Amino acid sequence: MRIRATAAAVTGALALSAFAVPAVQADEKPAAGLSVPSGAEVFGGAPAEAGAPAATARAARAAEVPVIKKVVVNGGKNIVVGTESKQKFTIAITASSPSGIADAFAYLWHGHIDEIDGFLGPTQKYGDCKVSADPTTSTCTLSVTVDPRSEDLYTSSLAGVWNVGVGALADTGGKDDFVWNDFQAKTRVQRFSKLSVNASPEPVKKGRTIAVTGKLTRANWDTGTYKGYTDQPVKLQFKKKGAKSYTTVKTVRTSSTGTLKTTVKASADGYWRYSFAGTSTTPAVSATGDHLDVK
Image 1: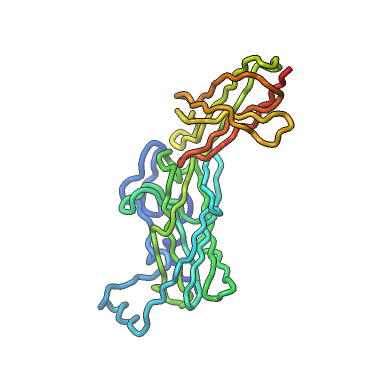
Image 2: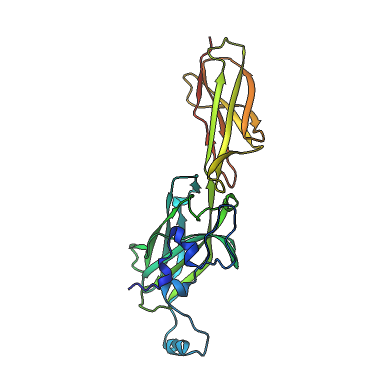
């Protein structure tokens, strides 16, 4: 049996408006009042204080509180979002309870719990729950869609670590038999990165100097464009024709506009590329190798 209050229908970009937050401009923070949902809102229960009528009615039995065993966001990978394409990922919650699991809920939030500045909720009303070999345990999967052109990611300052809130409802038919944790796990939401390379002149005589240029950019959610990533270490790598892997030649730092430029001696035919290791807010990326013909 599944029990879900109206608040459970909060989905994707609707999350901000669903919690009484007015629309925001790209360079604005949400108005104060944005908050995460509660277990009572989502599952329909209203745990009462001791001595209240509801608490008295439940005195005949203890509430069945599920145990959350595992949470996997996006298959264990970071969530990487650009400037235009919607990104879809899943949150899988494995939970157990003596009576089994009826439903589960999960969401991502950013900021401070008393005044959050980012929220990403599921696009479905109920979790897709599958019972394991042990009937007391189920894994419930929910889908989340992030649209960088909406209020989901309205500013680049939201890149980095997000908290994962999770709830699970026992299959007892009771609205109050749930567990809820706003700090169940953490994940990263990152700004999509791009990296280019060009080795010239070509063809070139062996031993002559070549220039290797490029640019490292990443999604800017404030403007919906890609901007240069400033002062970042990037490896210049070479793969000789016929070789299977690249070898690092030197490390070059990006300029104030994200550009890269260095010189090296041409030694053999092969491919040149730049490779960026990534940061907490930006994923690793390697340029497609540029072939250089050495005479």
